[in-house]
Amino acid sequence: MKLLKKFQRTIVLLLKLCLFVSLFAIFFLIFGNQNPWLLRSSRTAAICMLTFVVLGGAMMSVYGGYRIGEYKSKPIIHSLTLSAFITDIITHLQLCIMNTNANNNATFRYENPELLLLVMLLQFVVIVFFAYFGNFVFFSINSPEKCCVITSSKYALNNIVPKIRKYKKQYVITDMILYTDNRLFDIVNRCDTVFLYDVPMSTRTMLVEYCYAKNKNIYYNFEMCDVVSLRSRTSILDDKPLVASQIKGLTVEQSVAKRIMDLVISTVGLIVTSPLMLICAAAIKAEDGGKVFFKQKRATKGGKIFEVYKFRTMKEAGSVNRSVTSDDDRITKVGKYLRKFRIDELPQIINIFKGEMSVVGPRPEMIENVDAYTKALPEFSYRLRVKAGLTGFAQIAGKYNTSPKDKLVMDLMYIEQYSIWLDIKLIFQTLTVFLKASDSTEAFKTGEEYEFFCADDSSSETTETGIAEQDSASNTDTNTGTRE
Image 1 (cartoon, rainbow, N blue to C red):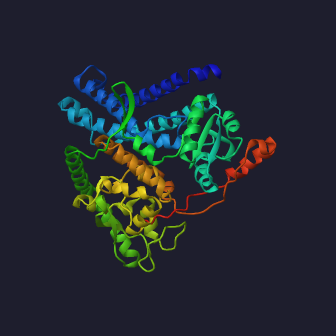
Image 2 (image 1 turned 60 degrees about the vertical axis):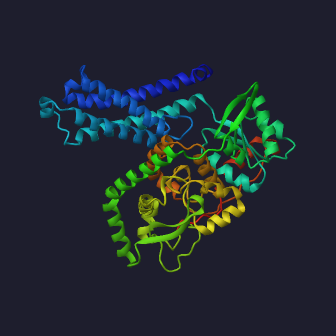
Image 3 (image 1 turned 135 degrees about the vertical axis):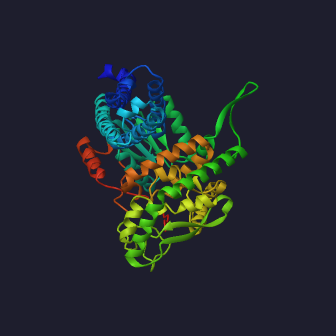
């Protein structure tokens, strides 16, 4: 195992190559079986193969690629499946366009989707195999990292521990302590990985430097200075190495390109989704005869107020501005499914077309939430520096019950790292939301609390029992954030 660990990167690279070659071979061998010319030296074959390789690599980059050891198998399957299917469809479309030879057209019937469906099915089977096999190989070589969690309060502990415990093959928590514990350095020394959450900046800086000196892996939550560093670059002023963080907004060219992209996507979106929206409208009306659309005042760039459109998913009577909870009796039967798959958000395409929103950007918050969040987090107002959007980091990675601070950080990450390419990546990544609908629509709820403990406090048997008991506990941030 020690020898295998030394060649771990090579093994992962070989698995990636085998996966990609398998996907490539399935596509071209199946289509080439009926069209031998596709496997011979020809301009069409060369261009189509190059398209598959370049586009496939780009899509894997967009969706995170084959990140075994970092992600669980299911998210890897979701990402690779979307990457492969988009690559297949576009390459197949190119084949249809380039296949203009009369003899080829006589035998290669693109009007029948069976071949493409067969390719996708076989590729899906291969992806599932490589996702589970890859993680099996990785975790056979690597044992879970022993980690400690250092926080400033039980509230902070209850926020971070459930997230870590979702990755049991990656991490095993041996200690959960306050940053004021006098055994702090001894605990860090015996761990492989250190998680810092809501620790004061002075202490965090000291611990980061200590972990760096001791070759310890370290994770810590974002603070405003970390957000500012996202737009920073190294600079040498004469002979002084400095970190340069310059204020910058969207250039005129970026603003124009972003608006053109919004207009094109919203126009196509309205045309493509209009049948689905008509079906949703009919279902909402048929259930209780109430209004189809829900309109609410929201804040966008510069604090400008506009009315956001959504499909109504709650009962009209008694539907007040408060957070959605598990089994909320205000949600209608139709609304339950609309919310699960985020279909209730579709009417916001109209807001995008009108120029009130953008496709990508921070979600527009209720006026009441903007005031409340800004009082608790003054930095919340920074997200109003750009136009509100339909999707973004917070919508792709977050949930309905993600804390306001975490949503704020993800929104600021987008603002500080903005580029047209980032917008394109986030638009593609939005498709993953529909594959994890039950997680992303998780409502606000409370759970059991975690307790601080140290491996030195009891025998190993008692500690393992305590860890096992806490594995069954769950806790979710109880900060509010209203959808409707």
